[in-house]
Length: 168
Image (tube, rainbow, N blue to C red):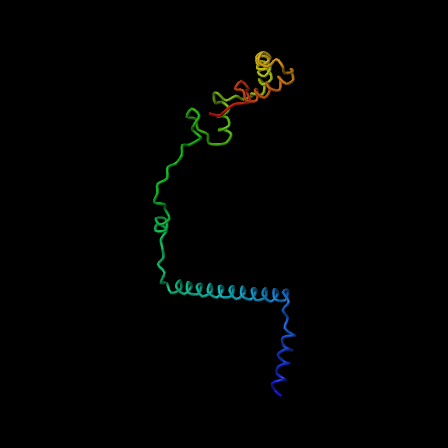
């Protein structure tokens, strides 16, 4: 009879076993958290051991001390660097030691247009009158407003436009 009594206990244990997905996921997260904590603890122990070894070496004086000259010779790059040209001396050999001096030199430089917007309106009117005559002969079917739109688009890219300047 003892065999019969064991069988219901095994069935009874299986019936109490929890196979819920949520419970298994919680248990898995708990195990992952514990493993991460163990990894962190081992890393801390390793770091502490390395620090103690390093401190022991420093206290015993077995580490050779370096002079500043040795450190400087070790840190210098072996490749020689070429320096770019000094941008402060580009304009006619003049040098600027402050921002104000640099602005003054650049303002006085030839070829730099200080106020192109003052000539914009007159230049546009001259460009427009010249281009409108040409476009009227090329495209007589268009209205004046359409022709003016074309002229304005051309004006934005035109070299006669004082706002289209390039710093060469």
